[in-house]
Image (cartoon, rainbow, N blue to C red):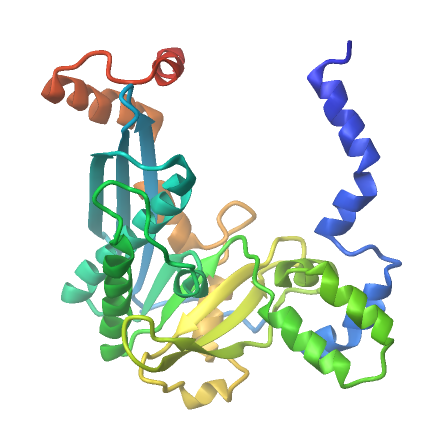
Amino acid sequence: MKDTFTLFLDFLRSNREEIKNSLEMAEDSWRRELYGPVFRDNFIAAPHIEPVTGKAVSSTDSTEFIRELYNGKKLILIRAYTVLGKKIYPSFISEVISVSRDDLQQFTIMLMEHSEHLSIIEMLREETPDYILVDGSLTGRIFRKFRPLNAEGYREFSRKYVEALGNMLDMASAKGIPIIFMAKSSESKLFRSFLLNQIKQGKHSEEFLREEEQLGASDHFLVKSLAREAGYTVPLLQAVPRIWGEGRFPVLTTHILPRVNDLPLKVDVVFSTEGQIPDTTEGSRLPEDVLNLLFWGYGDLKAYNIWLADVDRLVKFRNSEVENIYMKAFEREIGVSFYETRGERRARLRI
């Protein structure tokens, strides 16, 4: 009888080429010929980097902890920090509620993002940094498919989420502070669509184009496959729906590759919610100070941004903190010893 690792090896060997080609374009692929020229025309080499001095940069991230109780309810802890210098502006959400298993993941992600928005709002009430960095994607938050959630007391949570997001963006806009969202992973295809539109204007096989449009490659797949140096994709301007009010607001989206052997990062930049973009962008360029901040702030393969890595280290829940502080306080205050499911209790006893 084969063990599970042998079965895994069998799977990898049987699907090696398909998996490899889904991560990076094959060197002999016709897709390189299709995309190569337009990609080179729309990928800009990394700028000359100067040390970021005399600038106040805030950074925001969040963390979560979920424990299932024996009665089916979930204990949920959400914590977000906005760090500016030596100051920390926290936001904390704790609940014991019923949540549908089908909605739990989206509900948790939205709670974390909502907590981040509230944390930034608290910071902006007292501070005026030069830049605001946020871990995650803005367009992902704006274009999310909002729907009623099957979560106790949170069925209409989307309204509060949208209100806080709008307040955060409007407050930053009023103070003239750019908000920079950085996402480590992304399913974005905006840049790919931009390239395909250019390709269609040239002389290419319609058969190749039809096949490529069905493949559905992401922007990150193209950058990782085709970039030969550190740099960034031509920033694309989107008129994004102002979901907390009427009208639209401008978002510049690019993908940066801090080092050629690293992974791309999706970057959404909001300069204003009033429809104005600094003249220095010329519709296809980011201001030099923002570019310098992004590339100078790169740490290494683990610390893709020094400010976001710092807040991630501070905000993250750790096992010892959760078990020795939060869960012991739960037992002490609630007075019920066997409150977890059997599975959760066995897992905790093994820690």
